[in-house]
Image (tube, rainbow, N blue to C red; front, top):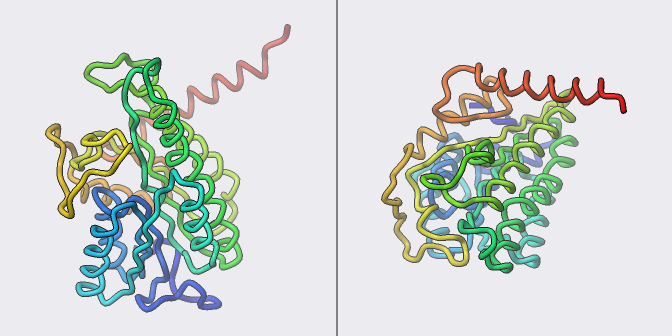
Length: 281
């Protein structure tokens, strides 16, 4: 896998692992932990960001022992402005060649009853943090002439008109992930003439502990859990992301074979835009 950092150039991204440094948010469990393990196995040094210090320490120790790479735990709550600023500063240091914006919380529940504080946390983590960290990473990546940004959204970004049950009540969460999809696709088009690679990863139900908490507090304990609903194994999600990075595919939807649904989506978008340009009133 060549994920945008080959250790050449001026050397700022070449860490002990040889690939460079990858920063992973939401690294204490699920997709983030699995992705960090894959990156370290491929020679990336890692900066591991999450709220649970014990889990980050355990993962960092395991990565160092199993891969010989450097692993830096960075405990932060991305809903807290001061913590987000610390992570932004770490990304802006200029050695991050791979950014995985994976941290997210769901805040599921009826919109009319959603606590304002939880709603704000969903927007801070799912929207503001993704935007701020990408903004911190891209200028340095452009200067270095290489870099990869993967932003994790959700298949629920495409489920706006579907009613809840069996889907969750998800107006704010789905809206936040819709932002991640549009933001990443639009930025990828803007940076299309550069060596940077961008991807929005849209998993469906995944075998993690994501549904065990609405986001107010992380799932306790040092061992990862899996929700009763199960879902796609995290390794398959990471496999799909890495395959699509190699192909240059911007929208990665694990489990979707071929490109026909995405081609249909793009055709529908073009028809809407064309109709809008042709309207006269």
